[in-house]
Length: 315
Image 1 (cartoon, one colour):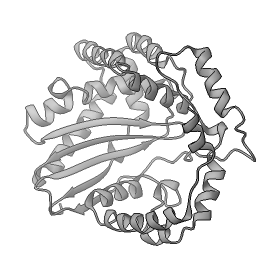
Image 2 (cartoon, one colour; image 1 turned 135 degrees about the vertical axis):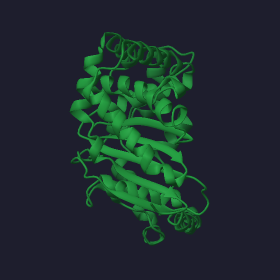
Image 3 (spheres, rainbow, N blue to C red; image 1 turned 135 degrees about the horizontal axis):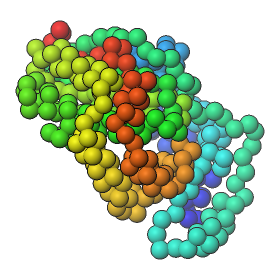
């Protein structure tokens, strides 16, 4: 703990090391900017977020080379502060002992000046868009469909959306997207769907890989499945299966001390109670099929999905 505190509170930040790392980082960034994976990610952000959004900022070799060691020190002094810090202690230690040790080495750490805002601003819902990113290294196309959601992590509808997601794409052949896209039609090699929801914004995405001629066919199936879950109640069997998958994941997510620590950190950042997984379990058990339908009807817009295709040819 003493060594951790010394590194966090009094970093050396030597200029001679900065001069070594800076050109290395600039060269690494130059290569990354040309990679299809990076270009696809950037195209996705450009389609989802406003031009002035912080997510649109781009690191370039020029911006890296323009920095000075004083810029780094100023940044450290601005954002490394106790009111933006959470410390989690996991192991064979009592709370009293952990608190005493942390207070000993971090107790004199004080925040100076106004607390900086480190959160992305809320974003409007996006319009539909399509982009192709050439990637000669791929035989199949990698496709991402995504849209912004004006929902935050503390919104109770988050749980109904996650439950519905486990009906759509949470468990290989047991879910609708896999059955419709792979088992029944053989259109894709894999498909996955997920929600990324934070304190100020959310994004829903579906990703899949397929032969180039199947991109639009697969998208049509996905859009139809999304429209279906918005308009009709899922079956009792699907509801039970999705609940079982979610409830099974809760103890697995805390199966090691590392997972427990990561969970506590994540929940602290999101402003959630530390026992949120237990509370979530009770919510999932009580959710009904009409709750899932209502949440998807409220938040998901199948016709507004942006499409990023990364692959060997345009469509």
